[in-house]
Every structure is written in C-alpha cells, then in structure tokens.
Length: 490
Ligand code: HEM
Image (cartoon, rainbow, N blue to C red; front, top):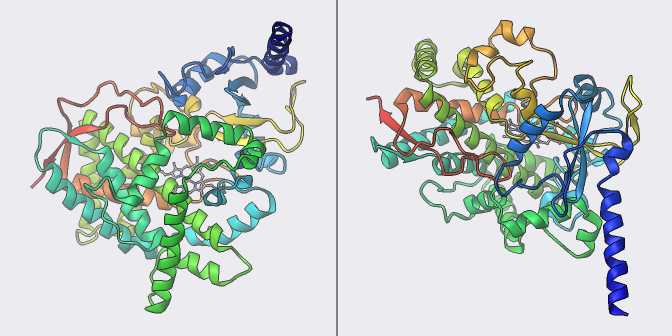
C-alpha cells in the first residue's frame, strides 16, 4: 500500500512540476531553461549574483522577442526587453502595472508597511504625503546635517586609514550613510564608525546581507504571501521591530518635551503623524525603516564602486578633482549645496558609476489585468510579475559604446541627447520612480567632493581586479570588501 501511495505521489508531483515549468512555453515566450528545485536560478545566490544572471540572460534573449521567462525558484517572472513595452509598463499603462508585486504589505510584518511595499489607493495617498518631504527645498534645508556627517567621514578616514598601504572602505562608507540616515530620518546621533556592533548599523547591514535561511524565508514570503501570513512569518526579528518602534517613539517624545524643531526627514514625519488622518504610527516607523534600508546601501555602494573606478582611472579622478577645486573657488572654498549642483563632471561620474553598478539589477511590476503586447499575439496574464532588466540595458553595446569601460563622457549633453529614452533608468520612470532621487545623489556627491579634496585614491596590493561580486547579497557588493589606498593630499 505504502509503495502505491508513494508512486502516485511521485507521479502527481512530477506532473505538477512539468506543468509548472511549461507555463511560458504555453504562452509563447522563450525562457531560461528551468530545472528542479531552483528553476532558472541554478547558481544564483551561490556562485553568481542575480545581477550577473540578469545581464547574461538579457544578452542571450534580447533578440528573441519582447520578453522572456525566468523561473525564480517558486516565482514565474517575465523579463521585458522591448523598450515600447517597458514604456507602457512604467508609464502609459500604470493603471495595469502599478504594483511592485512584493506582497509584504499583507504580511504580519508592520516594518514593511512602507511606500515601496504598499499598493493601490494606500500607495497613492502615501506617495502624495511623502513627496513634499523629498523636495529640493527640503533637501537644501537638510544640507547642513548632511555636510556635518560627511565631515565625520573624512575625519574617520584620516584616523583609520591615514596613509596606510590598504584600507577597507565598504564598512567605512556604510557607517557614514547609516549615521547620516539615522540622523536625518530618525533624529538620532549614532556613532557607527569603527563600531560594527552598533544596533542601527547591524539592523541595516544584516537585512541586506542575509544568511541562506533568511533568503529562503524572504523568497517564501514573497512567493506565497498568504501562507506566510497564516504561518505568522516575519522578515524582521521581534527585537528589530521593538528597537525601531522604541527609537521613533522616544525621539518624538524627546522633541516634543524639549520643543526641538529640526530641518530633517524625521520632523516632517512627526508633522504628518500629528495630522492623524494621514499616517499611522506603524506606517511612520515603517517608512523611517525603509529610508534607512534605501539610503544606507544605495549610497554606500555607489561610493564604494565609484572609489574603485576612480582608483583605476586616474585621468577621471584628476579631472574630477580639478572641477571640484575650480567650482569651490567660486564659493569661497565652501562645499555648499549650490556648489555641488554646479559640478557637471561630478554628475557624469555619478551616473557612469550607477550605469556600471546599478543599485537594482531590475525594476519589478505586477500586471493587475491581462495586457496584450502591441503588434504581437503575446499576452502578459493578470498576476504575472514583470522585470525591467536595467543592468542588461546598461551593458548593451547597441546603447552604450564599450560598455565595460568607465567613461563619464557617455553622459555629456550630446551623448545623453542621442540615447533612446528608457534605455537608462537609474531611478526608474513613471509615477513610481525613486522618491529619494535627490537625496541619494546629494549624500553620495558631498562625500565624493570631500574625499577628493582631501585624498588621492589608488589601487593597493589587496584590491581585487577584476572586481568580484558577492553572490549572496541582495544588492551588488564586492565579494572581498573594497581595499584601496587613500593618500592624504596635504
Ligand atoms: C543612488 C541612490 C538611489 C538609487 C539609484 C535608487 C533607485 C531606486 C529605484 C530603481 C527604485 C525603483 C523604482 C521603481 O520601481 O520604478 C527606487 C524606489 C524607491 N526608492 Fe530609491 N534609490 C536611491 C536612493 C534612495 C534613497 C536615499 C531613498 C530614501 C531615503 C529612496 C527611497 C525609495 C523609495 C521610498 C522607493 C519606492 C517608491 C515607490 O514605490 O513609490 N531611494 N529607488
């Protein structure tokens, strides 16, 4: 009897898996060949980072139709390669593709009830409430706090690296961005430099560098949100939730009791909270937490990769330093918001860095209804998650000459004008583009300006050339840290 039940079970599972893996074929799309149990992701997270997978498969499939299928373990996603379809998805048919397709909003984890994860009317309302918080006038008001933190970065580098032959920069840069976000988004003065045990730093770093079991849990929660909710699964630990709730509550109380009013993100969120119809306390905490995750790794990894490229391309470094000194001379030597906005070559270097090392290898959306791909018989069925493979386009020779080369000139006026729209999407497009698209660059650029004012950057004996990317981190990160030599200029 046992043998019969076992045989029937194996046959049922076999047919289920075969049927599951024929999804894209039945719809008429080519796909990256799947195999049980990881689908198309045989090596992702183990020997290759998802960005390396995405780049290679985009090259393999870009001429084989407007989209191709990928079985991301338990998740079936369509990767879009046609620019007109991408434009529809991000902008024209936002009515269909408005969700990121990450259902953590419905999970038990209130720390994820923030802008990135909510959908529908709640997203619309929250986006309208938070947009003014990131306006250029508000960023300008926050600039003195950002500037103070960047001074601490330079002081710490002088102390910790001061003419050492090799210095590891990943942790230094992530301490800088963590302190900065803790300061402006939580109203806290944390001391993260040289203190990896700092609770704030640990919470952000551990989330973005998950263990294998945490990765599996995240995948299950995203693929089967309803089951995850039933099982009471949560991405963040009880301790992390309590910690962030307490930090926000204590700081609100402290500011009210002492009548403190500062020009930072936290103050804006307190005002939003006082208007009780707008956002709940849990939503305020969740958004502060997401700002920490978004602001911490995006800017620190851009600083890391940019330092690496500047070390390897001394001509670019020299030209950038020249521009910095030239512009600062007209601003009495002071690094002001206006001075940074005048630095055109700095902007080109920043954009070239996020072209080569985009923060997200792909943007995601989920179809709320069936979508017929124009001029084809292909349909994206309701419920399907689609990916826009930013990294594929960034390295596509059709759009970027010599894509491996670090060349900021590809972002000069003429080259930008000549490029097709929607080919380069560092902050995405359409109503759901990155809300931190002013804040992120400014915290990166001010650090770069002060670094180049004080140090020259060189490769050292421990620099990994070519750079290896860690397969298991969520966002791209160097596998063995970033070792460079920072030489004092004075
Ligand atoms: C160099 C820095 C950054 C880059 C390259 C970047 C890039 C992106 C990208 C590509 C998206 C996805 C957009 C989409 O799905 O269409 C996004 C979303 C988002 N980013 Fe950023 N980001 C950066 C910094 C920041 C910072 C500093 C914050 C906040 C403090 C932030 C907050 C957000 C939020 C809240 C969303 C979700 C927006 C929504 O769903 O309405 N980002 N970002």
